[in-house]
Image (cartoon, rainbow, N blue to C red; front, side):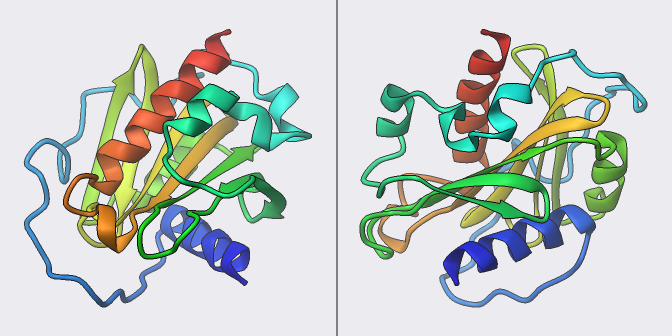
Length: 190
């Protein structure tokens, strides 16, 4: 059920659907993110990174040592979601430990995915280690966030973070998703 919810949230955010979220005490979004866009030209073919080996094994997109940086998470679970093959690392305790999901997407235009989420309250189009990424959330980017990495014109990897209640003071969703995206970019560059 949780995997289905994660898939729906990920697809909904990238499709530009709206949802309502409740809970927590709202705080202003960080000034280094929401609503800012770069001058990155659209229509870029991307950096030409290959995701081929991760399509059949999305859980191998992070090394064992990189997974330890996620905190106390359970063994990875793989499935297929709307964005393609997906791996999820659920927190050992849903209140204390955050959840991470990574989807590997083939043959879906990255520019179309960007266009679908440009209107979200949190949207940033920028580069991490020379690779174009977008960070987006339908609320404030503090509890949940999606970061999509452009591997090629029609290939991408999307990281979704869901920050556990006990970690919200120390971790914000978008910066945390961008941190994990940077690990993935390093692996894609090989």
